[in-house]
Length: 72
Image 1 (cartoon, rainbow, N blue to C red):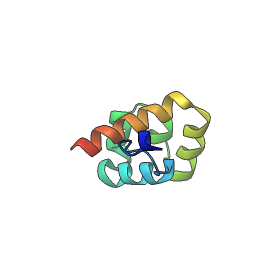
Image 2 (image 1 turned 90 degrees about the horizontal axis):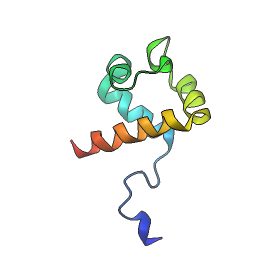
Image 3 (image 1 turned 120 degrees about the vertical axis):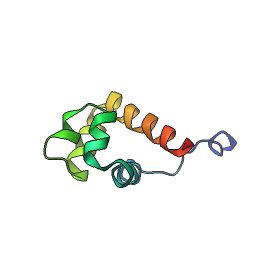
């Protein structure tokens, strides 16, 4: 378990990560950083979560952006 202590994603749900990013960047800003349609066309948390859970490559982009956001 000690390997998780330095992992900022540990204990974070995808939904909480997405909510933080949307609160910080808003949908338009988020779609500029990560160019996927679920952030551009009629975005919502639920539709984005559905897409991100089915597409690991997209989820990785969201997690990577979140890690950059945490660094400030």
